[in-house]
Image 1: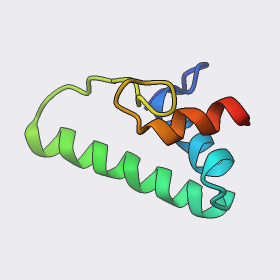
Image 2: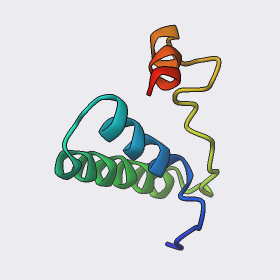
Image 3: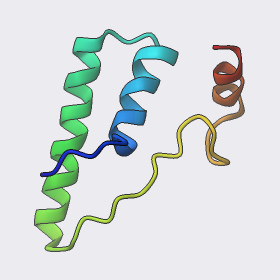
Image 4: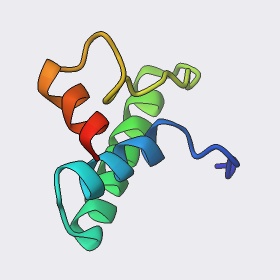
Length: 74
């Protein structure tokens, strides 16, 4: 595993859960760790390479409209 300067989609998800959803940082760290473990398990199970994809989150077309509005207000 390699650390990246930008943080990637897991960092985006962490910031979303803490800032927008109001989840505590401890719970968010556990949720992010679980997500990372699920990704690693899937890669190992399928014997494929990891292909990082952007999370989508607040500014994407796939995000619900209320999420984008919350980002503008924050």
